[in-house]
Image (cartoon, rainbow, N blue to C red; front, side):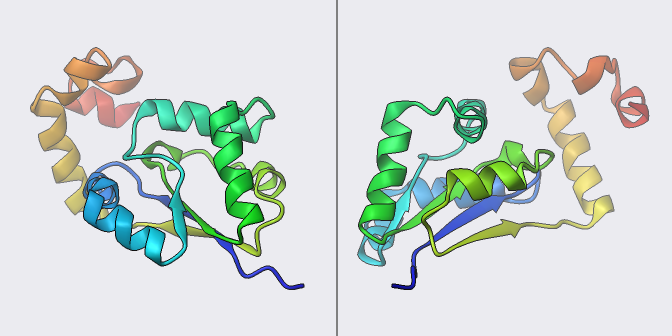
Length: 151
């Protein structure tokens, strides 16, 4: 028989509205609606932990609770929905095909934001103290926004 279930993997780079999408998907209203439409959401919201867990799954050491949800979706012909912002730079296509084998298709949804719009938003976030709370300041050891752009 032809498999009609699918995996929809939303990958939105930082500052493209991904957090808003994930917050909506995590609300009870949308979760109930997704379930009625035969979708199972693999992770609630987005976090660095979701990215780490998904990387583990794609490399053969998936936690049992996640493997169980994926298997249940396969066996019940349900669709699987993932939204992980931190996968914007990580493209494990071969591993995804292997891990999600048994689904009818894998669809990857990417979000694009015009560079200068993105840059202004990124600048505002960096100066809001966001990175200081989570990663000790700018990424890659940059000490200010200009040095960040040069990294």
